Length: 254
Image (tube, rainbow, N blue to C red; front, top):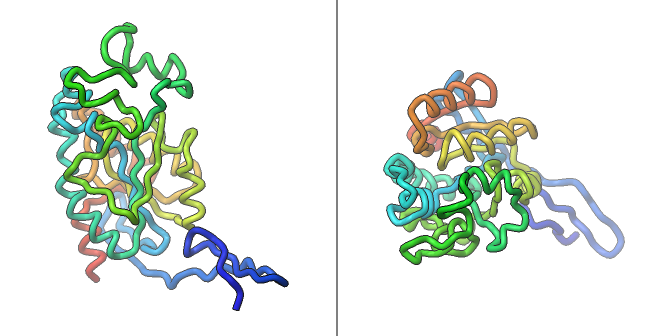
């Protein structure tokens, strides 16, 4: 019996002292059909993953960074309830849940001035890695309270965590390598902000050849309504599909 070699069940060689077999043993396809826009979809649940972006205290908590600088974070909290309902079902179905979150170095040495300018345009105030006034931690620094996912969405040991440092979760991260090792084709997206980090990550996924689905009620933005409208239009028109969590749950029950 050859020994399995590989970190992902769908991507393993079989080896022994004399030979190597690179024949993967793909799981039997599990069709998942659900209502979507601009067309209904059927995907393979065994080749799919759920990506949740930036559901962190600094973006979603009343004591976080966005709230401190005067942003109404109530829209950013709207995905919490549908995500809390959807994620356990996806895990039970064997679909990986991947958390892609801002998790900066304290010294910010991998971030350019142009990126820092977005969050600190005058050079003054509280930007990335600066201390929050309520002593909750430094803005979006890895392993701080500020960068932690909100308590209402517990991360399970089976979940995968990816730190990102830009609007897109693919730049300068391990996300693409992890997805390819998992042998994933279809990506479901949720999180905040829909018109910024979620959309940028979804666009890059599309450019890399992944099939992309934005889960509308599991996504939100603190930007004006026209930004949301443009995001949904562009996802449906150019980059993939949109659906709702209830449609996915209904599909998984079939």
